[in-house]
Length: 148
Image (cartoon, rainbow, N blue to C red):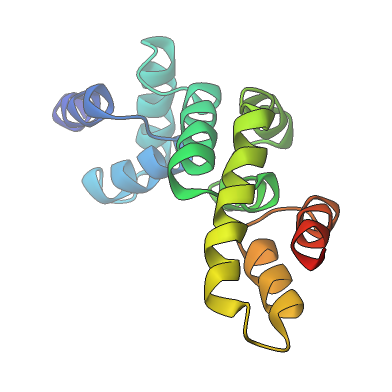
């Protein structure tokens, strides 16, 4: 078990992992012994190698600023990783809303350039932005700017 813990410590010192990712890695490493896995996870949490809030905050910040994702998609992806809803909400509060709005505006401008001759550009632009995880209201407000 100590060998598996050392391996997880090395992994966690390089980048953030959520508890579910570490649990999956430990299950493989410890051959499915659930009790040992939970003991190892608790030890990693105590030593501050694994922290879901820290992971969720870093994930939300990176996905919002680098990938251009909206809050809806980030929330969905974090919940798929098994992160608690209150932790997700707290992490999303750390995302700069002004930068996210600016990012949405730039994404829509670039997409609009390729769609402006298409008669269904509004629908396609809306679908594109909703797929990125932005809310309907946010997107609709931005699209109305292009229609003028």
